[in-house]
Image 1: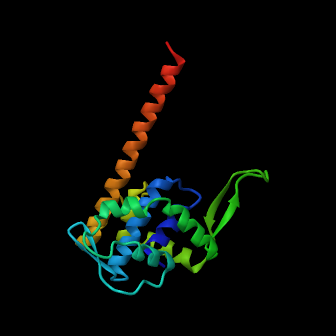
Image 2: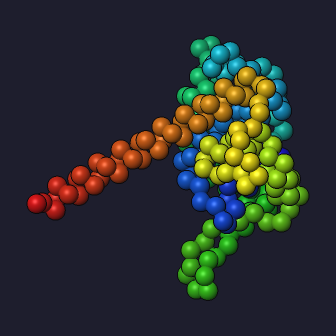
Image 3: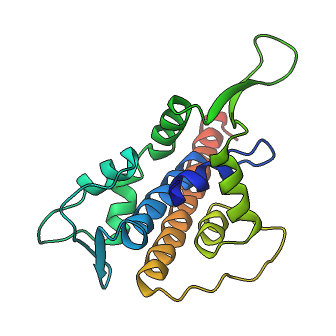
Length: 200
């Protein structure tokens, strides 16, 4: 399992509510961290993503992320990658995990017309994700925190000793805050527009 899949499984817990845009940005960051740490497929030069190995990772979504990287200079900045790769990425992960049998649609309420949401099935993948979450694994904890999920075990920031991973996590936090600022701006503009039409 990748950090991105672990994050998605944690985020779709029925007791949590995570914005799809926030989650998509964090998933793009998780993929990049996987490509740096686990697959050793890329390195960072400052905040530039430099592809390394010539063969794609085994995981399908991670392979898609790897193939989407700029293969030669000028290399892409981490922040730009998050916005480009993160576009609708949570939907791609939902579809992939449903296809793998790791998620299922759960109907809410008694009515057959009730709203549906996805929930993780009991599987080794879910147990692994929950184990990493319970252990307060630093990368997973930091990514979850970026999208508003807090660990019940600790409010402290996890210790990270990898500069490249830290660079990605900082960029994820900045991107999520930028997205929230844009949401607030739109909400204010929409309210002002509605008031204008209502009149005095």
